[in-house]
Every structure is written in C-alpha cells, then in structure tokens.
Length: 187
Image (tube, rainbow, N blue to C red; front, side):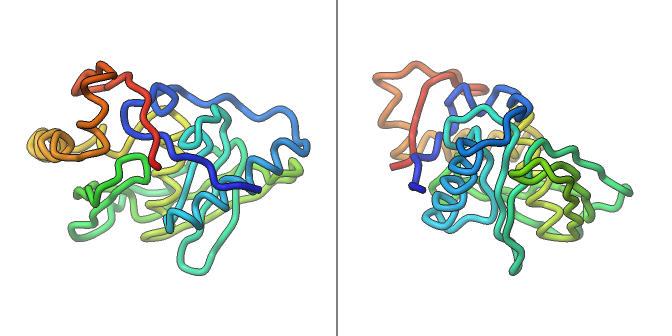
C-alpha cells in the first residue's frame, strides 16, 4: 500500500476511457489499496484509477460514512431530478480550491463488481450520487469541468491560469487551454 501522485488536469490519462478490468488478482487489490491510501492522504470523497495514472475502470469512495470501491461500474440515473441549489464541485485532479457549480442528478445507481469479481451495487442520493457520477465520468475520460456552462468555463480557464501548479509547467510543457496534453502531478 502506498500513496501515489495524483495526475492533474492536462494529463492525457484523464482524457482516455479506462479499460475494463479482466484480472482479479493481487495487482488489483494493491491498486485499490493505493487508491484508498491516496484518497485518505488527499482528504477527498472519491478517486478513480486514471487519477493515479492507471487506465482501469476502478474507483474508491469515502462519502458520509460509506467507504468502498467498485470495479467495472455501470452507472444508471433512475430519474431526471437534479440536485437542488448551487452545489459546487471540485476535483483532486484540479487542485487549488477550484470549485464550480455543476448540475448533477439527485440519485444514481452504480453496478459493478468488487475486487474479487463479486457483483455489487451502490445506490446514492445527494452527495453520494454526485460522487458516483463524478468518478464514473473519470473512467470515461471526462472531467467535471467539461459540462460547465460557457461563462463558468471561461471563469475556470481564467482561474486555471492563476494556479502555480499549472503555470509553472507552461514553459516546459505545451498545453491547449481546452484540453491540455501536458503531464502534471500533484505533489
């Protein structure tokens, strides 16, 4: 078990659909342990394998007293009710206190398997539903900022330019403002 560096906005692994897990072995168990250790270190609610550079469909979560993992999740949104209010969303791969309003569904169901290949289901409402949607998006190569409205996205890009972790790498790594390709790590 070990804490892994978190890949940051601009790393191509965050924009690539993760592969299905086919081998349920010790390496998978170590990956899940590493994800939990890293999540605990970062004090986050969820963390997907691509965020530590592993292109597999695995995520862990620690939300409202519920802690666990899921392998090969399939997300279902059982109705069209959105969360109310101006829920702000952030991401460990976009550090620096950057949180933006992001509409998510009020309820979500994730079905997949555990580290042994046994079927599991996670039903979430409110913040847990947000976590399931956010982490599943990561496995599909999407970030929460992808679906911000135009004004909020412009605000994000302006805020991003003021981030030391982002601007420090601009001289050595070329990035595109809309979908950067540089490789950054959160130290």
